[in-house]
Image (tube, rainbow over all chains, first blue to last red):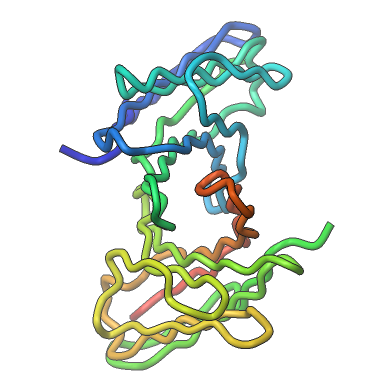
Length: 111
Length: 117
């Protein structure tokens, strides 16, 4: 079992719809959770970070964390074609510097 | 705002050659991370440095070594290159937050694309 699991997709949604991206992790000691967006051939770009249970909203993006279920998600409202990219879930454990990335979910937003 | 700088951006080497990748973190950032990302793969953590000392080690081959210098820039040295080393190599930097462990955001550089022929 990978330490951070994501559905590889592709996830296809129409423009204006809500895109829901999910991620599960295996290390219960994990403390920090990040969502990165990566366009093909480009470097990952931070979208959201979340550290405590519940929801965190930033513009069209909402991150949700449930530590009991070891689950973190990202909702993208009013999806735009420019949101089409690979979304990487990243998890950082307690005490260490290492960040573990999931394999990423490819999102396609159809105009 | 200043970003993470990596050089070179592209590098072509032959098998068994050596390569050195450089990373210049964002000013005042004290921590550097190296990642390797193969085609269609997620970034794999290689190694990290905090205040010029190795802080964590991931799946870095023994043929690779890295260090962080007094000006906080870092270099990844790769020897005896293999075809499978062809990948994007990202450097990320962050500044450790006192008393708030693990909440630092990593800022990624543009990457070095290494092709081993």
